[in-house]
Amino acid sequence: MRIILGVFLVFSLIILMISPVYANVTSVTLEKSFYTNEEKMTFIGKEQDGQKSVFIVIRDQTGGYVGMVSDPSSDSDGTFKTIERGVTQFFHSKGAYNATAFTDEQGEKKGITITLQYDGKQVSTTPDFVLKLNSIPDKTIEEKKTLVFTPTLTESLSGVVFSLEKNPPVGASIDNETGKFVWTPTDAQGPASYVFDIVVKKGPLADRESIKITVTEPAPITQPEPTPKPAPEPEPIQKPVDKVLGIAPFVDPTKDPQSYVDRYNNEPKYKEWFDKTYPEYSSIYQAVGLEKPLLVPAPFVDPTKDPQSYVDRYNNEPKYKEWFDKTYPEYSSIYQAVGLEKPKEIAPFVDPTLDPHFYIDRYNNEPKFKDWFDKNYPNMTIYDAIGLDKPEIKEQESGECGSGTILINGVCTVDDSQKQGGGCLIATAIYGSEMAPQVQFLREIRDNKVMSTASGISFMTGFNQLYYSFSPTIADLERENPAFKEMVKIGITPMLSSLSIMSAADSEQEIVGYGIGVILMNVGMYFVAPAMLFYSIKKVKTRLSF
Image 1 (cartoon, rainbow, N blue to C red):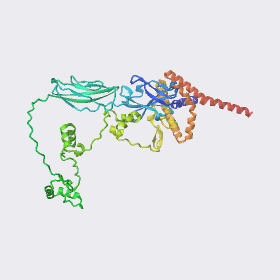
Image 2 (cartoon, helix red, strand yellow):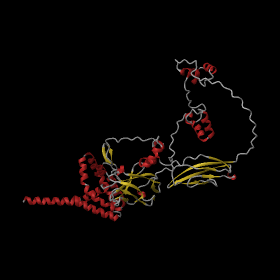
Image 3 (cartoon, helix red, strand yellow):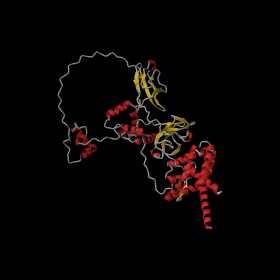
């Protein structure tokens, strides 16, 4: 019974720990442009040295660990190709994901990261460009006249394809390559309005802008009246030059100028006297040398109405906008005039249908996208561009329990949520983090090898109940006692080396066969060899005693 328990514990530790050899990765991508849910995906790329192991960690848009794939050994020239894994094994929710390829020399933080996009049906690499049409203003054209314009993109790109969708008018056309739009409406097509979409596509990305074209009847042609012969121009009259107005003579420089303004506003007789005596001044403010303050809200604003109604009129009625801009140029915007705070605007390249964190992930993980953004938007951060506040980073508080455990009544207790597919507590305590390459590779062996077979699932169900009964205690001892942690790390080194052969197993028979072989190998190293040595020493001592 003791031997069976010992073998069980040895195999348990093997599944949870590994320490492979690595070399620097220089490139990584999906082997195909996209994979559907029914397919198995593969990553390809190159590393520097050749004949080395390469690992690729996949994380979701929040930075959470999703899974890992690997190539146990690259070709001699450094070319690698990971083991095939099903798409649905890693991707469950729509959105952006990061895939980081690295080696032990690099570590995950220094590895190469690419962005993947999952739409619920397929996963593909995210292009390193932004496909976005600039806003297209509404157009007006008379019957039988030709309307020509070319939509533009926020970022200059080649290889894009333009098209018209959603009921474009008959006879309208757009050049697929240049985007040049041409249309000559007929008599039968006016007067009327036509609303449709202009669409641009490049690879898996697409963008569209709605446009409204109004067709009007031709303006009536009138015969111009004969131009009368102009009369001789009179000699110009020299007007006296106005004297530059300064401070009014009635102003006492020793007094506060605001006192005159207060009298003007509060004393009708004083106001009447000023307006009659000093009509050359535009206001009491000019007369006393003060700048006239802006009235907020502006005089035209009715306090009984919703201020937003004025903003809506400004945005939707061109004549109202023209009137406001001409009549009240002293106000910086319609929002200031009506007493509202101007809303925060997002950058034109941002697609409002995408998760804003998609752009943050690209900025943090794609150097080309970061250089493009910093060059084109030097006066804003990526958070300003997408309309989000920059998050505050809080430092971890001291006195917390280790990974995989939670504090209950002052005692570190195993977190039950870690028991299903996570929580490599002993390995995490040895290598310092659950994101360490060794710990992540352990998950790869456990999730993609052992858990891929019916025998492995049955084994892990019983193993979890036993392992989590003692692993929190051992992990806490390792964190509290560095010497004990090093002893455990040294003691398991031979076991870790023997586990590398599990990477070659694919079928259930191979996994079971290799697993039994590894168990027997480690039983020999950790139990049989020490027992034989102890027996030999005891036999020699017995002979010497005679």
